Image (tube, rainbow over all chains, first blue to last red; front, side):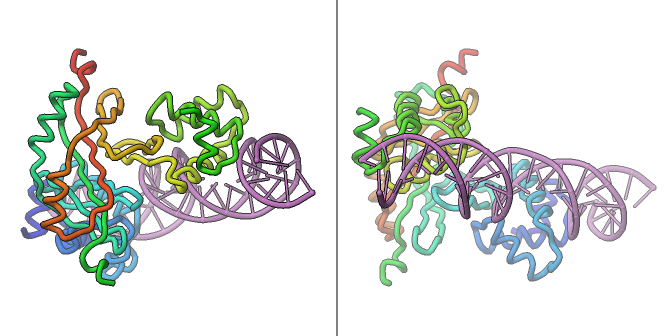
Length: 134
Length: 134
DNA sequence: CTGACTGCAAACGTTTTGCACGGTA
DNA sequence: TACCGTGCAAAACGTTTGCAGTCAG
């Protein structure tokens, strides 16, 4: 989707910096603060980390972005989409979205724990096909 | 299991501070650095955070401890045991271990992604039965 | 025109490091 | 005894905050 529209839908003012942040998120899929900073410096040599943090935080508050916590790695951010799992290559760091059906697991867990489950975070770690060749 | 034996099995020198760290881990199940610090100060008023970090890091390196990353919360540590999932109450912070069978999901993911999966991290979030009463 | 956004600098909380001393094996 | 662990202080990070100038709506 168009980055500008996306920002407007969430009532965020459209600035060049924000447009580029959203573009990078669309292109990269998952990106860390540090990587965002490096990429943004191409277009905005004087961009500040504070700007990035403020924007990321605001976008997360709006539900526009989601934070993905991955064991032994920096957190990354992605545009919020429907629930899905992640798989990470521990060698090259690649992160992929995967659609899995955990509905039966979910009802199992609900039954045994009596919790009212609101969300779930599923991350698999391993070696991707590319890295296995090497 | 006896804390002293546990330390010796991993070739870690047995010190009073380490014994108490392992005891707390056994009692609490999951504990954050900050909480560890508070509890340890009872027995060791002059204990240093540096000591705790050094020990936790070393124990993680040895595979003795596992770090559990939970969305929107401080990381907690647990004695390493066989693969299991976690469920967290977003209200009171309680963390429970749960045994779920994800073997079929796992083989699905292996087939579709061609990854060689080494480990998985599964965290459910919701409201525990106790907090629901309130 | 007004309020929000940016960039800078400083502050803050967390984690790591270096060193001298003390304790474990 | 030799080495490792501890505690202290300082340093290194990552993140947040306050402020003055600028820009989007």
